[in-house]
View 1 (cartoon, rainbow, N blue to C red):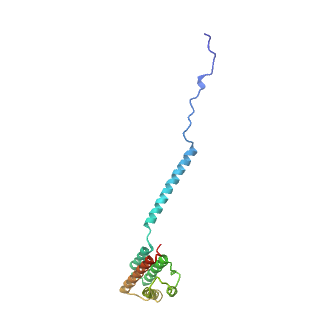
View 2: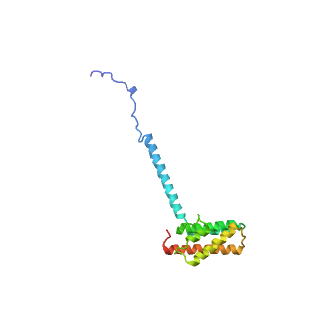
View 3: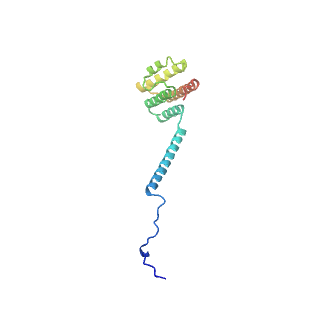
Length: 172
C-alpha cells in the first residue's frame, strides 16, 4: 500500500467548547424576579397583619379615654383635652359628625336637628362639653371623684353613640 499523505497535525486540535446552560443576564433577571416576588409576599403579609390588627373606632375611643384618665392624674387641663378629643374623634369617625373643628356651642347647635340622639344624650353631651370648657379655659380644678364621673359619663356617651350607630346602620 502506498503511504498516506501527510495531513493536519493533532497537536492543534482543541476540545469541545462548553456552552453554559444560562447566560449571566438570564440569571440576573431570574434573581430580580425572585427578589421582587419575595418582597411582594412580605408586603402582602404585612398588610394582612395590619388589617387584622386594626381596631374599631369604638375600641379606639375607649382606649383613648382610658389613657387620658390613667396618664393625666396630676394635669386636669390635659385630662380635659384628651378626653374631649376621644369623644369628639369618635363622634366624627363613627357617625360623620363634624366636631373637632368646632367649638362646643357650634357642635351642640349642629346636633339640634339630629334625630339619631335623644334629648337626654344631647343634654348630657352639653354638660360634659361645658365641664371640659370650664377645666380647659377657666382652669377649674377637679377632684378625683369628678374626674371618675366625667370619665364614666364620656364612656357612656361613646357607648350610646355606638349603639345608635349600630341601630341606624351608619357603622361601616
